[in-house]
Figure 1 (cartoon, rainbow, N blue to C red):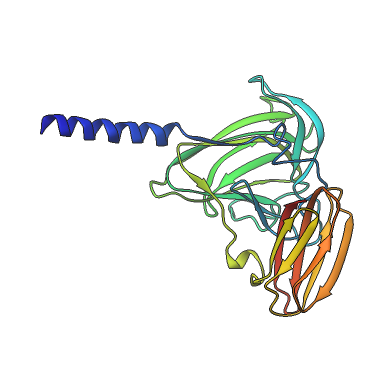
Figure 2 (figure 1 turned 30 degrees about the horizontal axis):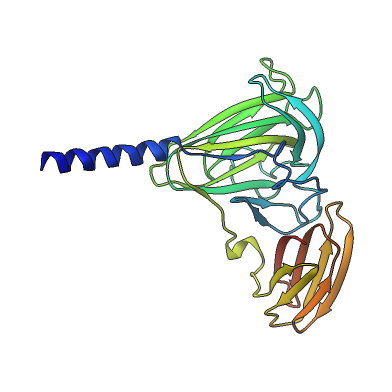
Length: 265
């Protein structure tokens, strides 16, 4: 019996150590497979690598990944940046952003670490981590203790976890984010769109397949430079032929419902 109890205790301890030790990293500056150069994600929310990206309806440049070298105090270097290109649309004591923010869900307490640079050299800019109601942590550039490059951590203590949001006071550039101590996921709820539609899009070789169309849909296909490559309006399943590359596909139904996809051909 003592042996069994000892084994069970060791298993529980190992599981706890695994949970505490796990880290999810979004390396915007170096992971060019997940975060290739682009001019933005468009105007519809998407999820990339368990990270939700919520843009602004009036501009497609949120989430642009562009070249910009940076070397941080801890030795981290990167040749590219993820651009917020604007603020989250709120000021304290309101901590639920309405535009240009990142979001993810965690299943317990965790530490969020952010590497960022002000969007305008020499100016004070702040990046916030919140749970939608409370400030979890923040970092500011050019606040008298640092310059343009900032590293800060935010400690989230909820035992049951929840959704966290990351956004700026105004334009800031993210180079890396890490979450340690909890499992990370991100999903788009129905209120991320007007009402999410059933249309499905997938790629096979050089063909883009648009299926499960229930009502009239308009489809726009953009390349990484934000240029419109193709568009069409259809009431039935259809296909498009595209060159090899990375595309953002936005779909809108006749009722105004929206959906967005990122695809590699």
